[in-house]
Amino acid sequence: MVGIETRQWWIWMLFAMLCCGGAQAQDVLSQAKKLMEEGKAEQAFNVLAPLEPQRAGETDFDYTLGIAALDSGRPDRATIAFERVLALNPNFAGARIDLARAYYAMGSDDLAKSEFETVLKLKPPEHVKPVIAKYLLAIEARNRKLQPSLTGFVEAGGGTDSNITAVTNDFAAGVLQAYNIAAVAPTGNSIKRSGAFSQVAAGAEYSRPLDGSLSWYIGGDLRDRHHYNDNSPFDSQQLDARGGIALNLERDLFKFGLQSQRYYQEAVTPLAANGTRISNDRNTSGVVTEWRHALAAGRQIGLFAQLNEQRFPSNLPQNIDQVLVGGQFLNVWEGRGSPLLMLAAFQSRDKAKGPLNVAATSDVSKTITGLRALLQYSLTEALDVYALAGHTERADDSQFARSIVAAYGKDRLFDTGLGLNWRFMPTWSLRGQAAFYENRSNIALYEYKRTEISVLVRKDFK
Image (tube, rainbow, N blue to C red):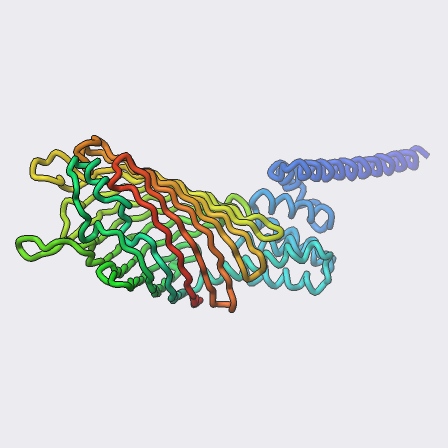
């Protein structure tokens, strides 16, 4: 009789222990879920991970463990947990989506794509489909980055320029105020000119990955502008070349490269005694670095810096070494019109390489500070309208560099523009723009107004 009672007591004790153990385990799972709701994925994972050897195979436990692992930056551990869930319940769409997310986080794009496509076949709720579509687009974009790419464009058009040489309205008054010399008539580049122009441009860039995130690139652009109405001396050609390396991480882009620009414009200046003529030709070359960071979908910040040397082959006193730094902010809002806002700020310090005169009392050293803004709105899927605004200040660092009256020249350039961009075919666009410039200065000789209206047709190659 005593033996029977003893066995019954042990049975009741074992039953109680199992019940308490199950309740305790359930409490741990509830605790982990609560931590997840509070955004404490790391703590939730630390709570659940020690129980994995005993509870692996329980759907609720494995799914919660997988979410905690994924959200705490352990996609490899998450895939194991989600695969156990799907082994028992292949139609668990939530686990399959999260398994696809884990594969994506690991960089296993083929597996992630397969899982996302499987979920679509299971006919998920409508609110889930856009999420999957974004992941599939991201996978496609990431795969493109892993392949060599060649992009390019050609464009052509024309317009009118009200002040090709950017000169003041009253040249004689400007010279009088700046140099105290009366009745000087404008000649050569000092004559105000206006007229029509045509413009063509072409460019290309090739990039090739070195590994999953590092790539190199090389590219260049060529632009030519031709003026009519006897303004051909102000025709210009510009050649830009660039190359470097880019490191593209999940939310950050780093670029380091070299750049070079050749600008050619004959202009109109008197012949020197040796038979040569000063032109506007200039050569610029330098080093450029850039960083961009994605704050969120459609929102980005960036910083850039350049070290340039600018040389004028026929006008040596204008030679400078330049340090340019700046930053920018870009935001695209979702919804009607997809409004876009871009803000940029920059400053350059231009150090002259030589004096302006024999006495070496002045040079062209200067500091330029600028702000720019772009606002764009899409009227339709193929038609955007935009507005531009900018403010640039120039402060001469050398005394009497541009006047014998004003010790330090100070300029403020305001520019505004309105335009539209119509993508009338998938790779073709038509851009029309009207821009207005006004430069205000404490030296009247450098004050001017200018209006430019242009229309360009562009073809992109991708």
